[in-house]
Amino acid sequence: MKYKIPFNKPFIAGSELSYIKQAVDFGKISGDGAFSEKCHHFFETHYKIEKAFLTTSCTDALEMAAILLNIQPGDEVIAPSFTFVSTVNAFVLRGAKIVFADSKVEEPNIDETKIEALISSKTKAIIVVHYAGVACNMEKITAIAQQHNLFVVEDAAQAIESTYTFSDGTKKYLGSIGALASFSFHETKNVISGEGGMLAVNDTSFIKRAEIIREKGTNRTAFFRGEIDKYGWEDIGSSFLPSEITAAFLFAQLEQIKIIQQKRKALWHHYFQLLLPLANAGKISLPFIPNYAENNAHIFYIICNSSQARRNLISYLKEKGIYTAFHYQSLHKSAFYLKTNSLKTLPNCERYSDCLLRLPMYYELLPEEVIYVSEEITKFLK
Ligand SMILES: *Cc1c(COP(=O)(O)O)cnc(C)c1O
Image 1 (cartoon, rainbow, N blue to C red):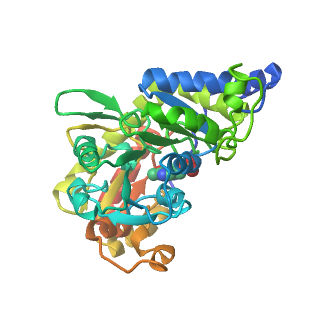
Image 2 (spheres, helix red, strand yellow):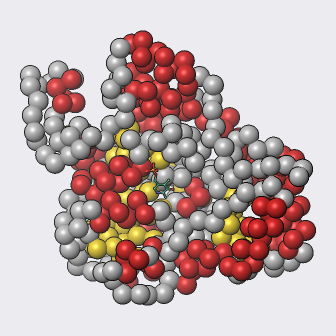
Image 3 (cartoon, helix red, strand yellow):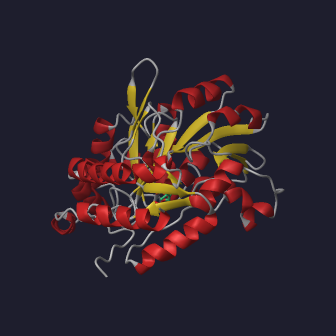
């Protein structure tokens, strides 16, 4: 076997351990110390997020979002079905009913033209997921939300460093547009801390309460700032903040973000160029990036012509030492959702569940490995 190419390898910047040692030497290892502050500052200045709150995961950030929006039993939220369970579980935990929207024909993101028909008097929020770091149509979605008085939550778990350009030319980073947004630093993402996440608060009216919910429902953060002389129980909440060890690891990564992104984007474009002839021959489809979106090369995927074609390709590539992965199973067809909801068809979402295949994509992937993977795919499908 010429190569052995895993699906993912976590990126290591090199300074993680010395930053963790610094955090330990400072004698402040619990949350919201100097490294958390550096990470918050990075996100607020680079991405124009009003207030950044590191969390222990993106899942936690989404749970905070659901609490902040005061989601009550019986409320409805609209979300894509082609996503990770955490996007919607956070809202189900508060008693919400999830109303799933289909993906678009040309890309896995939520089809904004299908949203309005799903809005009812009980709808509270639209949750969007920027799949593969490619922006949803935020201008249209924001307009629909405003018109119907709904909140927009961005699940930006995969979308660090990606942007959306509005029709007036204004460019914004993903995660800075919705009232609230979540990010993930799980080891499968572009920038990592093992497990880790962040809640971005862009609607400033949520900042004060977010601080309390994140600190177990207490006003301890205001106490540490010296604004009050004792802290107490103010609200519901949980322990959503990560330790300084996690923040130190993350900050080491954030310092390298330009280098990480340059490398990943080069690999992404290399795949795209090499696989274009196959796409032109109708053997596969390639990712579609709308004009308003700037892609962060989080995932490189191809879409096979059938689930059988995908299955055959996965086993062929495995024999060649290449590890690939399909992605989400449609949530609207999951056993859990069908316990309380009736079966409906979301054809585009189901096609991505059946036919989308993710190729190896990580910082250390070599250009010759991209060539090898692309050649093997071409050999098999031609
Ligand atoms: C990774 C991911 C999550 C979950 O992130 P964690 O940090 O592991 O909780 C949620 N939503 C999407 C779209 C993701 O890709």
